Image 1: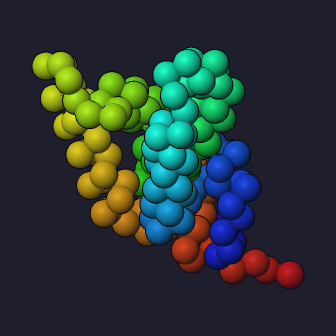
Image 2 (image 1 turned 60 degrees about the horizontal axis):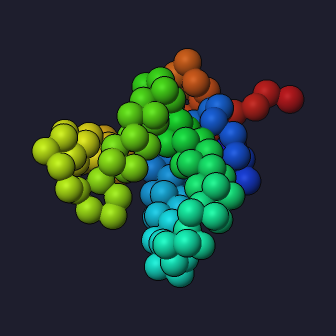
Length: 136
């Protein structure tokens, strides 16, 4: 990302790394869109339009989570666990197993939202906050 945030790349590409603040902004944006859709769509409309609304939201969520996981030095496949946890507890936990998914979301919030990314380059790319100096 070379010090500049390319929002389309953040939302639509799972490769590379993303810093903490843009990832948090993107995550909150996706959650607000999902909550707004849930509030506006009635039960009947929800079942019809949900097939068109949720897949792009999940794809964008997976891309944002993958980039942030890469910044922390982890595989982007962990995003699947976080997305399953979000689906399990949305809009509020109801069953016993939702306790486990709530713990997953707490881990994700602390690890991805509070902890800084790896200082230097890792196997997923250079540090997005301190891009490598280019030699002409």
